[in-house]
Length: 385
Picture 1 (cartoon, rainbow, N blue to C red):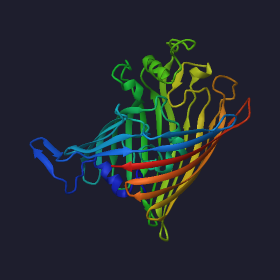
Picture 2 (cartoon, helix red, strand yellow):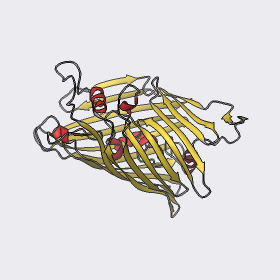
Picture 3 (tube, rainbow, N blue to C red):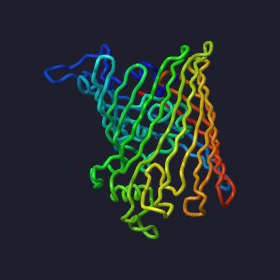
Picture 4 (tube, rainbow, N blue to C red):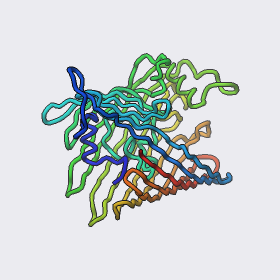
């Protein structure tokens, strides 16, 4: 379809730990096997956006340097590779290690990224690192229920072949991995399975994941709370209660299919995700779920599709709902969020695309005031150098 959607070759390249080099020259010696050239891409991404929200004036913004990053990737050893998205602070880091066991490969990957708890090895294009076509991952329930601090980090142990992959990760919120937060090194277990058979000529993928366990300690809660602006200068409290404990509880299902109808390429994506409420926020306990820091359970589903009738034009559309089941008229009032999105992308070159995306998001509280609608029109220009 289009970058960053993964094809079958892209999935294989990732499972091999970014170590494939083709005809690229290597520098080799005893205990050394690295490319003679550094693989690096500069992303230049101007954006022009108009946002209109019920009861507020329309805002129009231009960001000539939006999401301007360096992508660095490739082999740094016979069985090891790396992916870095560098925005001046190392926004996303994945260290890949892949070993051949004949009929399958297995590895250990270390990561701290904004691509979600499955980023240790994710082969789906529904969410995370590869769900960005036409802002597609905005229409992903799994992607919406991200860890509170934005990044998720940890270590993943995985095994994969051409038709399936499974991983067990130990994770925490990435804010607690800054080297300064005393997070006790306690990591929550996260499990992921993804099957990718070919059915009637279509490349399909379906699976799910579950994360459930304690992570970090009260220092982790404080670090995340500070990042979210929940603690700080007056009138905010200087600290969250010392009895609060951090946990990560969430599960999801996802599905995708890539194929052709006549001469038209088609991609279909869907997921469902659910995150347990934070009992501390509800005043009924001391647990803070870093996937959902509100006093109401969160769950939702999203569906979207892309069609590519010509080699350089893509159209996309999708719809989704997310519900917060809190019915208390408290700080976090429960609500239902419905959104739909349409968009088109034109590939000037394979590495230079222009996208126009319209998103309509309506939030309806369970109690209290009426609904609020936000309409966003985004012109996104992306060049990969």
